Length: 354
Image (cartoon, rainbow, N blue to C red; front, side, top):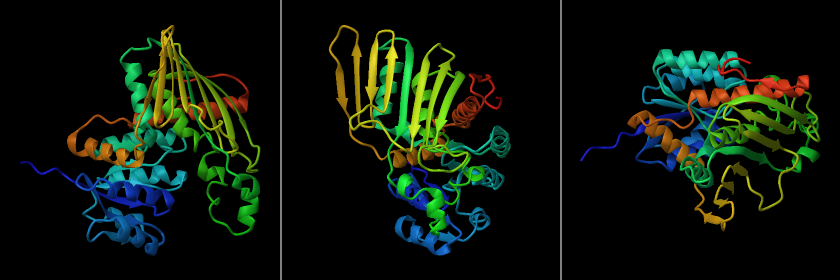
C-alpha cells in the first residue's frame, strides 16, 4: 500500500483569514499539514501553530524566515491586498508552491509578473477562490455542463450583505478612535478599491464559472453610501457581455444585500432556468416541474486546501488557476474604468490587456 504524500505548508499572515486557513489545513490532516506560520507578531503566529499546526510547527516573525524554513513546501498567503504580488513572487523565487487569498493582485502589470515568476520557478500557483467549492455552485455547474438547460444566455451573481458597522464605525470614525480593522482597507493604494475588488471578487469569479465563457465587454456603476473613503466604494453593479453571447450581472455591496432566502446566483438558458445558494439548487425546464436539490453545507476553505494539495501532489487540474484569477482581475479593473469613464469597456482576449 502506497503512502499518501502530505503537503507541508506555511501560512503568511496570522489575522482572521490566516486563522480560517489554518483551520482548513487542520481539517486536511493526511493530505496537508501546517508546519509554520509567519506574522509581524510572532506571538500571534505561535498561537496558530499551537492551535492548528503539526507537531513542531514553527512561528516566524518574517516572511524571509518562513521561506528559509526547509520544511515548508507551499506558502498560503493571507495578507492585505497590496502585499499579494511581492509575497507570491518571493515564494516562487524560493521554490515554494503558492495558495493566495483573493484578489490575485492589484494591477495587470503585477499579474504579468506573477505569471512569469511562477512559470520561471516551475511552481504551482492557485488562487483561493473558495466559493468554487460550495456544494450549490458545484451542482449548478454539473447541471449546466451536462447540457440539461441548453445554451447559457444570462447569468446573475450576488455577493452582498448589510453591516451596521459601516454606518456607525465608518473608517474615518474608526481610525480616529485608534481601531485598526479598517487601516489598510481605508487606503485604496493598499486595498485596490472597495467592495467590487474585495467582496465582489467572489461574485465575479462565480459569474465567470457559470457563464463558461470569457468576458468581452463590461459596464458598471459604483456608489459610496456609508463608508466615506474616497476611491473605495461600498456598492457596485456590473453588467457583462460574454464571448458566447450571454449577458452577466454582478451585484456586490457592503451596504445591503438581497432579502433572506434569495438566490446567490441565477442562470437563464435556452431550455430553462436555474437558481442557487451555497446549499441549494433549483432548476426548471420550460413547461416542466422544477427540480430542487438540498445539499449539505461544505467547509469551502477546507475543500479549497484539499484541492490545492491534490493539484500539487497528484497533478490534478486546478480550478482556480492564474488565468482564472487574471480574467477576474481584468473584469474588475475594466468595471472600475467603465464606472469612471461612464462608458462600456471592451475586454481584450489577452487577460493582461485592458
